[in-house]
Image (cartoon, rainbow, N blue to C red; front, side, top):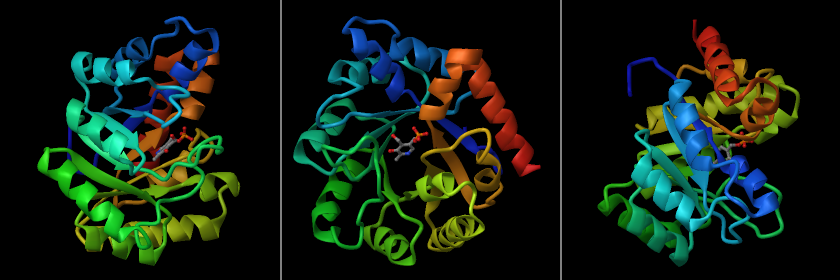
Length: 243
Ligand code: PXP
């Protein structure tokens, strides 16, 4: 799973649940999507259990942990409720994200610097339960430093501003600098948000990155090419950028 130089692809399946929830039944099943992702070569499954349960449900998380062979990365807000759920299900990894009720998606990075005192005990409890903790942060020096101070093993850099800037050189340079700095601090570096076939190359080429987490685009593309086809094409784009 952690082959040297291999850039892992975590497939975020939240929006399979969004479509399912539109009709309240059980189709399409996020569990089936996770199996399809595994068949297409995904290295992990990511799912965000939001406070308002707008896509993933508690039952989905329980089933993903029980039924899927790939490691599960649970995205969660820094709340007591989510901490209890993570400690119950013990996913492979937990990525702490900021969460605002009214947002359409995770809009900004976590303020690891400003929230040190809240995050420290939570990181400790997750770590003690054997869960690999990551913090979803903006590619900024002070956030990387704050993550290192919190003792997490992983940071995930927010690629949203890069993705939404149509591949701005400045935004890419921010990601490159933050990835370098995080790796020098001994952190494993992940990245994600808003990645697509069109913009994944620049990010995948950053040598310090160990994992990308990609969701919305893949689930949307699956409408046209099927989920497995979309994932295989993303995998190929990532591999091409690494060559
Ligand atoms: N990484 C994190 C921490 C996220 O919150 C999200 C969105 O849920 C993603 C990656 C995936 O973003 P997208 O769905 O835009 O690919």
